[in-house]
Structure formats: structure tokens, C-alpha cells
Amino acid sequence: MSSTHEVTNQVPPLTGYDPIAGDAVLAEACERHADAATLGSLAGLGRLAGSEQAQEWGRLANENPPKLRTHDRYGHRVDEVEFHPAWHDLMRTAVEHGLAGAPWAQQSAHPATPEHSPYAHVRRAVGYLGWTQVEMGHGCPVTMTYAAVPALRRNPELAARYEPGLTATAYQFGLAEPTGKQGLIAGMGMTEKQGGSDVRANTTRAVPQPDGSYRLTGHKWFTSAPMSDLFLVLAQLDEGVSCFLVPRVLPDGSANVFRLQRLKDKLGDRSNASSEVEFDGTTGWLVGEPGRGVPAIIEMVNTTRLDCVLGSAATVRAALTQAIHHARHRRAFGALLVDQPLMQNVLADLAIESEAATALAVRLAAALDAGESAFLRLAGAAAKFWVCKRTPAVVGEAMEVLGGNGYVEESGLPRLYRQAPLNSIWEGSGNVIALDVLRAMGRSSDTLAAVSDEIELARGADARFDDAVKRLHAELGDPEQLPVRARRIAGLLALCLQGSLLLRFSPAPVADAFCATRLGGDWGAVLGTLPAGVLTRDVVERATVGGV
Ligand SMILES: Cc1cc2nc3c(=O)[nH]c(=O)nc-3n(C[C@H](O)[C@H](O)[C@H](O)COP(=O)(O)OP(=O)(O)OC[C@H]3O[C@@H](n4cnc5c(N)ncnc54)[C@H](O)[C@@H]3O)c2cc1C
Image (cartoon, rainbow, N blue to C red; front, side, top):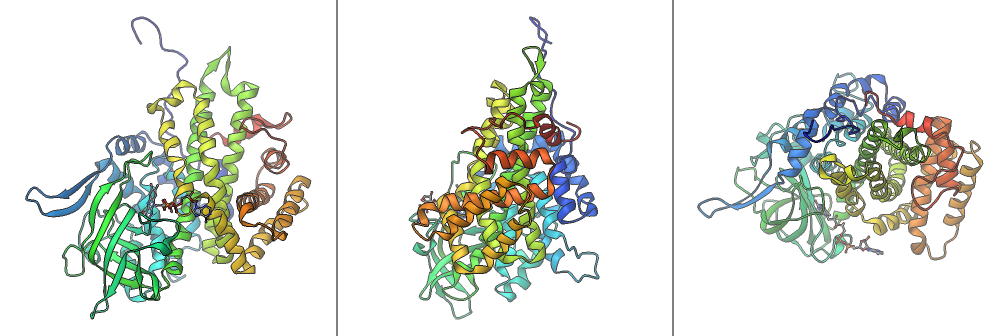
């Protein structure tokens, strides 16, 4: 209460909900690709994700960004980054709930043991999608730890040494000899000043040593989460670009050379540290064959791309949840916003985008559980292109639903908005990933066959979908100027996959509106342009998270 007026028509705080079990779309996807017990195992994480406590961790971790300490008070180099305690709370929660490397151990555990899970990757994907809605920055090291495991397995000796720490559900921050730690975090260093997409242009050099290790000299222009224990790093050998494991602390307990030059001053992702690093006689061990660094690190990159899709789907979902919550409590011109036809159109359009992103993201994770590597190679790249590209537009529109309040930092929407473009930039920027979609199809006919099989499952369910599939095949059948058309192809491929999933698994109003707009073209150039006749109230109702 103020002395001059009564505060009315402001929405209540959005807390005390469960973004996992309370989200019908996510919960259904989990049950579809795993089972009810898997969903049930995420109950604690879901409740925490919707709590005031976790929201406060997210705020604090972003308002108190990491600080670089290059030297100690006596002038010795320490190359450490300090984080606010809230960052560690976020990280601990993610790791302890199995969102980092744990699924690999759960998947490969003997089926007769309680550790084994046939749905380990889906469980983790659903948990990640729900939990990172709280705070996106810490998702980066969680992702890289998850993604490092399959790449590291190319060197069984190193995997035996470090995989138990990477797949552990314990978070132990701080520089120490990795095998003595309860849990490990991993990062990657590929991008250099002269180029990130074209890693073959890397200039960092590695020199073999008599003891089987290598000494690396050069730099990395972007290395996120520099306080991680282990890094997969690209460097040149005479044979070509090669992949190395670089620990921050060596087996004898001494510090490896890992000079942090600066932290990046980024648009968003502010809770997470992204650094510039210099290597000067830095010790590393080869992962994979000499000169075969790209195929080695691509194992990691393919998995981080899955998380780009999950993270973007989470960003979209977080923004949508805020928008619906606001519209359900805010009145204008005598009625709640959520009851006004044009606002329903906007919210329903956002909800359709979110449902399509979520369905595709969880389907990709299921491919990891099922060992569908050909499907994942192509569908993962197309989804990375499309879902990440859609995110800034969706978050911007969701922000507008909150009016001026949405533009104000306290609402949380500005943080989502700043984060929104990132997943499209890293791990293959838009053009590079679209070209990679062509490469994935060109290298092997299995990838397109696997994705086509999935798309075909909905053939005949909707004429607009069938027409879109025909257009896709026409695009693919035309060999002329493929690179110019790469974005069209990648986008259409992702849309056909989303259409196939929604037609089979979503309620008719959602699938019908998706086909009318995204596939049939009955849509405007901005969101909120669904054609009249779409059951927008039903679509928004479905997207309303229980308890909000
Ligand atoms: C917050 C953040 C964190 C990051 N963390 C890490 C990290 O931990 N480790 C790491 O190694 N890297 C990291 N990166 C770097 C990131 O992966 C690279 O920025 C990205 O791969 C692009 O490389 P680049 O910046 O050198 O751009 P470039 O490779 O120069 O590309 C510039 C533009 O040109 C386009 N392009 C490139 N080639 C073609 C082509 N043949 N045809 C058409 N268009 C093309 C690209 O799509 C892009 O839009 C991070 C980046 C950010 C923003």
C-alpha cells in the first residue's frame, strides 16, 4: 500500500509451481519416450525449479557475475574465477539430480543393477528442460560435462581415469587433482581468434613428449566455464587438427598452464564465465587418432547441440509460462488479458511454438537412449538450426505480453531475452549448422532415411503436412545451388519433424493450428497471426502450467 493510492491489477508472484510435472506437454513427452516412473523421479527437481528459492539463486547468480583473479596477493598466477554462492547452488542441484554426465553411467550400467536406466537420456533431457528455466547460464558447464563423456571414450585409458568423476552426481568446486575429487566438470576449447566455425584454421600446436603426453602452445578465444576440471581442446599436430584432454590440475597435483587472459563481457549468459585462455607448454593427452580431432570433438559437439535445442525449448517455455501467468491475472479494458481474443491468439501462437520445440527436443534425447545415431545426426542439426533460431522472436513476443513490466529487469524477461540468441550462435552458428544439415545428408543416406521414416509416420494425417513433405523432397531432389538453400532445407526438415510429432501426439487444436500456419502458410510475418477458427482458448489452457 502506498500513501497516495492502492496497488491493484499487478499480478501475483509466479512461484510454487512445477515446470516439469505441471507442464502437460513436457510430462507427456517424458511418459511417451520413457515412463511414468521416470517422470516421478523428477518430482523433487520440478518442485524446486518452481520455487522462490531457486528463482532467487538465478537472480543472484546473474546480478553477481563471476570475477577473474589472475594473480594472488603475492603476484603468483592463480587463474581462478570466483562465483557467487548462488551459482554453486544452481550447479549442485543440476549435478546432484543427474543433469551432467550421469546418464552415460546409467545407460551403460549392467541391466540387472539399480543404477541402470533405459531412459537415462530422456530423464536427463526432461529434467534439464525444466530446471534450466530457472537460470540458463549454469546450463553451459552442465551441458559440456554431459557432452564430454562420449568424446572421451575414444581414449579408454583416459575414460577409465576421468569418466567416474564426470558421471558422478556430486558437485565439488575448486582446482584439485581430478581423480581425488568426488565429481568433475568439463569444458571445451575450439574457437580461436582467427576462426571458430572453421576449426581447421586453429593455430595452437601440440608437441609429443617421451612420456606419451603432449605440450600445447597457443590460445583459445572462447573457453566457457574455465574453472572446469577437464577440457577437450583442439590443437595441430603434423597429421592435422587433433583433440586433447587438458586438465587444470595435473596427476602430480601441480597446476597445469592455463592462463586466463580475460572474461568476456557478454550480452547475456552473465552468470557463466567465458574466458580467453593461453596455453604455453600446457600438458594434454591425445583423444582419438592424431589428425582426427574433428571427428573426436564432434562427438561432444553433437551432444552439446542437443542441449542447445533443450536450452532453447526451455527458454521459450519459461517465457511462455511468464506470459500466460501475466495474462491470467492482468486486466485491461474491463477483462482479463487471457480472455481477450487477440491476446489469446498471441499466447496460443507462442504455445504452439513451445509445444513443437519441446516435442522435438525430447524426441532427440530419446534417440540417444535408443542408439539412433543416424537420426540424431541429421535431426539434431536441423532442430538446432530451427528451434534456436525461433527463440529470440518468441521471447520478444512473450515479453510484450507483460507490457512495460516485461521490459523491466525484475520480471526476468530481459534475462531470457539476452540469453535467447546464444544457442543459435555457438556450436554451429545458423549458416554453419544449416550447411551441416546438408553435410549430414551427403555423408550417408542413413541419416535422411532415418529422419524420413519418422516424418512418414504421420503421412496422411493432414493434407498440409503431406504437401510440406512433398516440398521437402522437391527441395532435396534439386541439386542446384544447395548451399544457397541450406536454411530453407534445414528449417523445412525441422518443421516436418515437428509436424509429424504434433500430428501423432498433440491434441487436435495444437496440431491443426501448427499445420495451418507453419506448414500451410496461413500465418502472418509476426506471432499472434493464427487464422480465425483456431481453438486458441484450448491451446492456451493446455499450455498453462498446473498451479500457476
Ligand atoms: C557465450 C559464448 C560462449 C562460447 N563458449 C565457447 C566455448 O566454451 N568453447 C569454444 O570453443 N567456443 C565457444 N564459443 C565460441 C562459438 O562456438 C563461436 O563463436 C562460434 O562457433 C562461431 O565462430 P566465430 O565466432 O569464429 O564466427 P565465424 O566462424 O567467423 O563465423 C561468423 C559468421 O559467419 C558464418 N559462416 C561461417 N562459415 C560460413 C560459410 N561457409 N557460409 C556461410 N556463412 C558462414 C557463421 O554462421 C557466422 O554467422 C562461445 C561463444 C559464445 C558467444
